[in-house]
Length: 535
Image (cartoon, rainbow, N blue to C red; front, side, top):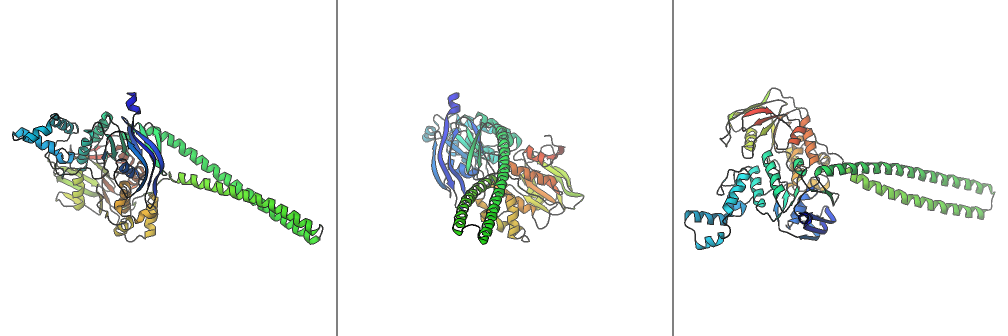
C-alpha cells in the first residue's frame, strides 16, 4: 500500500505556460501522485483549465516550455463538451462491441464478431452495472441528444470510471450534478485505484482530497491534506502578509522622514557656509574644501537613502500586489424593485417526464425559491418555459431575466464589452470596465471574445449583464448560476442574491451556496410540494 501511495503518476519539470497577453505559469516543478485524489484550485481566469489541457497533452494557443512525463495512462473530462455521438454506446466509445453483442444475441453474428468479443464477454454486465450504480435508467441504444446536462455529465464520468488503470483529469466534474449524483461521484473517486486531479469549487468534494494545488501569482503551491488544511494555512499566510505590509509601510515612512531630515541638515549647512563666505571669516580655499567634503559626504548618504527607499518601495509594491490578490470582489444586484403581490403562478403544468406530479406553486414579490429535482426531471425545462411564457398554465407578472446553463444571453464570438453594451448601451466603456474590474476582469480581458474566457469568467460577465439591465427585472430565473465559479465568487453572488429585493427562482445543487443566499424554501418536483430546506 505504501508503494501505491508514493508512486508518481506524472512528473512536471520547469513548466512555463504563456499567452500573448499574460503568463500563467513560470518554471514550475511538481508531481501528481497515483492512488490519491487531488484538487487544483484558484480564482476564475487564472488558467486552471489550460493546465489540465496541457496535462492531457492537448494543443492550445499557449506557448509551453518544460517537460511533462506521465508514468501511467490518463483520461480527461472537459469542462464543457463532455459527450459526442448520438447514442449512449457511441458516447462511451463502445458501439462496435455493443453492436457485436446485439448480433450475437439475435443469432446473426459473424466469425469476426466472435473474434472481436473474445475475452470480453463480461462487458455487457459491466455496462449495465455501471448504469444501475449511476441510477441512469437508460439503454445503450438511447439517444443522448435530449438528456439533461446532469445526465450527460454522469455518463461521461461513467466512461472514465471504466478505465481503472487511468489517472483522471477532471474539469469541474460536479457541474450540473444533483446531490445524489455528487455522492455517487465521491464514492466512485474514492474507489478509483489510479487517482485523480480535478478542478473543483465544491467544498464537500474538496474536503475529501489528499492534496490541494493552488494556482496563484503564476505559481502552483502544494498543500498536503484536504481543503480545510489548506484554508487554515492560507489564513495564517494572509495574516502574516498583512503584518509584513504594515511593517514595511511603517519602515518606508521612517526612511522618508530620515531623508527629509538629511536634506534639511544639508540645506542648513549650505546656508551657514554661505554666511561665512560672505563675512570672509575663513579663507575661500579652505571654505570651498570643507564645502566639497561635506557635499560629498551628504551625497553618499542621500544616494544610500535613495537606494534603500527604492528597495523598500519595490518590496512594499510586491507584497501589496500579493495582498491585492486576496482583496474581495464586489457585485450587487438592484435593490429598487418595487413589485408587490403575486409575481409568478404555475398551475397544473405538466413536465415532459410524466412520472412526476403536475407543477403547482406561486411566487410572491421578494420571495426566493429553489427548484429541487434529480437530474433529468425537467428543472431547466421549467425555467425555460417560464421565461418564454409559452404555456397557458404559467402566469408571470413584470419583467424577468433568465440565465440558462449555456449562458445563451452572451454572444460567444463578440467581445466582453460588445456583449455588455448590447445588453445596456446606456453605460460607457469606462463604467463597464470599472464594474468588470470589481470582478477581477481587468485590462485586455474586456476586449477578448467571450469564448476565450474561462467558464467562471463567462458566468461573471453574464451575471454583470443581469445586474446592469436597462430595466430592472422583478424576477430572476437562474439555472445553476454557481457553476464554474470559484469559492469566493460563489460567496459574492450568494450575498448579492441575499440582498436582492426582487424574486428569485433558482436551480442549484450546492447546499452551501443556497444557505448563504438565504434561500430557505424549495419546490420538489418529485413530490409536487413546497417545503422548507434543511441544511
